[in-house]
Image (cartoon, rainbow, N blue to C red; front, top):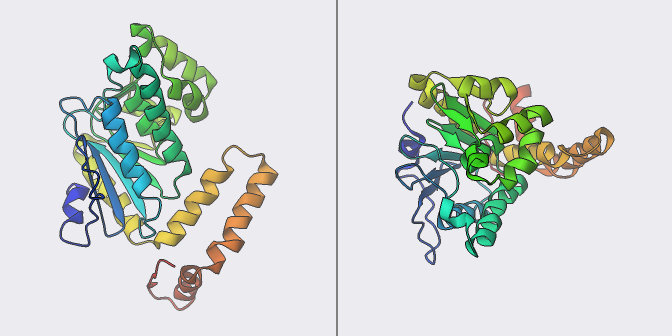
Length: 274
């Protein structure tokens, strides 16, 4: 399937606010799919300015109730080679950590499901960014890793989040070892959802995007909120959280009733996203 950017042309395309023109990402929303592409060649290294663009894009989606899926990609051969090295130094270090942390806070609190499509190396902050998305598809040739230790630093976000994604032992190994792992290994340890043949990555991504395109935006958002909000809770509290979203939000919507009626009546639902 063609790159998802082909599917967002000429149809109610969202444009960034007039007071913000993204310089280091491409960003558009159409047909309920938000597309964010890191675009800082050659390796999509994430400087403070790149991360500011990314944060502006993520934060602008908060009140767009028709968005069903956020798709994150990297332009060119790299997904992202990580953070800008010069930003670690001097006064920029604090700004770098603040901008980087904000990305992951935005990803954690959003009610929109997220998909990372990783066609090339994802290193350092790029690796944890891809892994932090709800669904991560990676080409077999893609590599993941945290080489920061070789430069005398570590990723603060990876130190906090990686153990939750791959477990304590593998997180220690990745952060202290500094070596890269294959996409197949990343799938095995739970860092990515699926590793697929390079020539099938766009097809697989297109299938996921189409699946979300066929959903109600509201149902997708409530389901994501139920899962994400319960991740770090004890089971009983997690169940109460999911029940609250189900009873007080989902079942109060028109789309929940329409979906159930459509199944009973053996027809395709007509979503209103409300």
